[in-house]
Length: 119
Image (cartoon, rainbow, N blue to C red; front, side, top):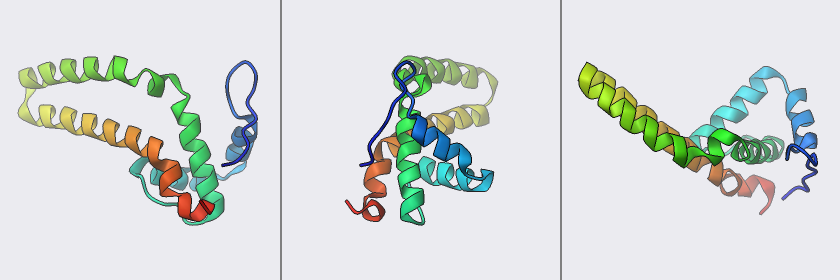
């Protein structure tokens, strides 16, 4: 794994952030999408950035406090879905499933791209 230089106050990897921001918009979008669906990247450079992106996302508050907000919103959404329409209920359950799969994909990004990273 690459050496991580973090900013002392924010916990951010400044080297990753600078390299990520240097990418063009299309490359960033492609890397983000492949990480979110849990797929391997195209080459070693993108794999390294994907692992850095997943690690960066795991430090964000929405990820760290997932189990605090997720059940509350799912229960509230299911209650509202029962009152509105069965299709709305299905949409809420699909969004909940997607959130769980994305969280799992962020945890597995290093393993999925291990072949390209030479591990």
